[in-house]
Length: 152
Image 1 (cartoon, rainbow, N blue to C red):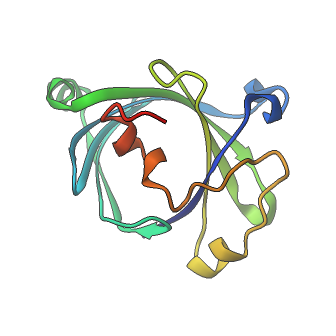
Image 2 (image 1 turned 90 degrees about the horizontal axis):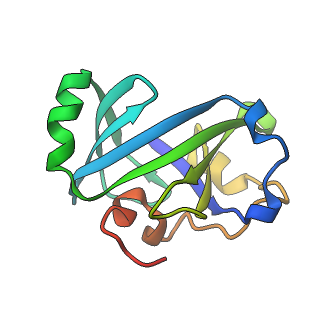
């Protein structure tokens, strides 16, 4: 079960020296958006992911793929193949902030996600001051929606 909250971030509020944090270059495409079936390249790792419906909490299954399988499936992706850099920033209470800095065509979009062990912990979370609008309950900022080229 994936339990996460998602926030918009304004460029002027970004933490300084992002390059000090671990990062991954991510590329992902969607074979289906209802239900979500995604392929992802994360640095040199490849995955096929299924996600159930949901906003705050939803089932998620990740299966490893080979590079060859990923490259075979990539042309079959619907819409836009999303590219972004994900920074992993330590947060209080042993949590981590995953900050996604999107590349074209969504350059300028910055989203932070925080995963939680329980829904109670997610509801009790007080985000840092540099976080912007909470978009957890908006499908507009799901990557599966962005892959369709929706305006934001």
